[in-house]
Length: 168
Image 1 (tube, helix red, strand yellow):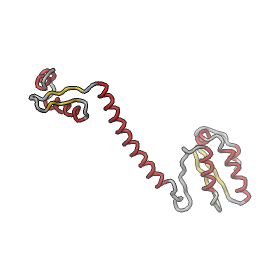
Image 2 (cartoon, rainbow, N blue to C red):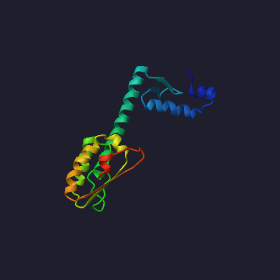
Image 3 (cartoon, rainbow, N blue to C red):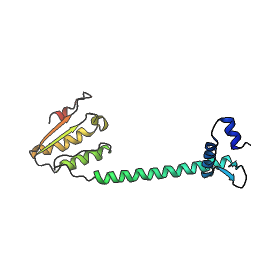
Image 4 (cartoon, helix red, strand yellow):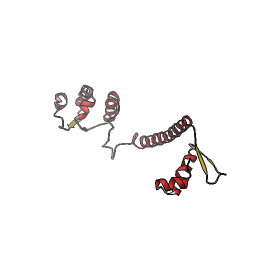
């Protein structure tokens, strides 16, 4: 066992810093201090107990952080989820939904169209949702009869051929 003064002289670490670390370990319940001894004497806690306490503290910290993230996500969903289109004409769409949810959400949004539907998308969506073209094609057919003009603009980044959609 060594005193803080001896440790400080031997290591070159200031004695105040040594006590800061020891007090920090004590505040985490990882070391015990006998406050009546001079100089103060610190003793370690059993290693199994230390590991259990560190794990418990870390789990608690992660639960607090998890709750914070859930609250932020819920707030964002409430702000963005039911957001009406800007000036009645424009919607921004998430593409992280499951394929069928994505297609049905878009068809539901477009069902109120009276004159025109303009879809601007990245061709990556065709890789992400491979069955989208058939579902969109099925939705487009009755629209043509209702004389609603539909235009689809896909990025050409991946050079994908989409003949069914290009015909529209």
